[in-house]
Length: 255
Image 1: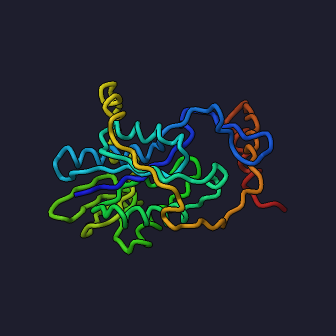
Image 2: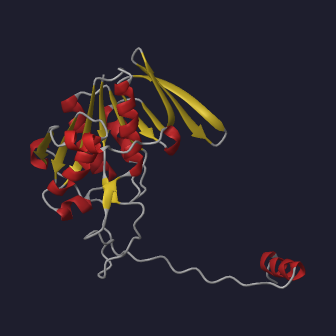
């Protein structure tokens, strides 16, 4: 079984986000970047399936610039076998991509690689769109299971448990299919120094967007980016009765 894992390079979750001075986006120059945390969970699950001899190959794919090879090397150090970098013509083009563009490109990669399973993070922490996995499944005409908290593969059937408001939902589908990962699926491993060295020898294939014969169409325009308003400081009340009176005044309908 072959598994394809799309990953995205995002600002590290420990970094404080800063808005650019021209209000066109967030500052990324000189900022620590890393693999999207949900994608790390997807990599870990794919590698675990390989370690259990359920899968024989794990392929990582990302869409970005030449500088995105660093996260591919990181993914390879976590246990993936090879990686694919689809290069955009410029950083500006990359910023214009929306979820549908990414899904369209991933569809072309999936048709080329013919994986049995696509495992990907349920969302990226930079835009929080939570759309690409669902769009990819729809474009391929494959079944999907989102927000997976447990995955079992047996005899070509993927059995997935997912958390819903009322408890745990179980669903199964005949592969190929798409699974998006939730936080509770697993705990990603750290890349050891020997594996980081081995990752330098693993292949990274590159292809230009033009080779896929896909032209992105800009659908969303960012007008301005700004920080949310600061929260007002709270007040200290002297007694419970004063708190009750304040609540009464706040909740009672105006006359």
